[in-house]
Length: 133
Image (cartoon, rainbow, N blue to C red):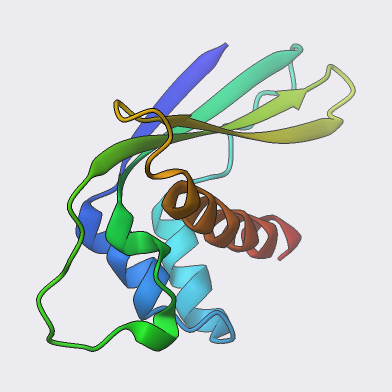
């Protein structure tokens, strides 16, 4: 297995949650292509590639885009970690299978679970867009 890690800055998560226009194909495509989500092309052998994305989660991220006021000081008081694994398995006959897994780590026993779920749902929709285009 090859593991490639990506660490997203909290400001990127805030942008995704509060300012990204999901209907703007160019903006979404530009964002996801910068993350280099596609696995390397190795048709010689069965191979598994993992793209592991680390996202800092703040309880501020659970609020909707509708409640966001540009220029207003960011809120939130508790941080946790969301890890996303995009597992791509390529067989010898070049068939590709992808699986996306979400893992939430919170020192306060699930305090940020609603924020983590909100970010996970948004990220999943971005991945769907990326892999369908």
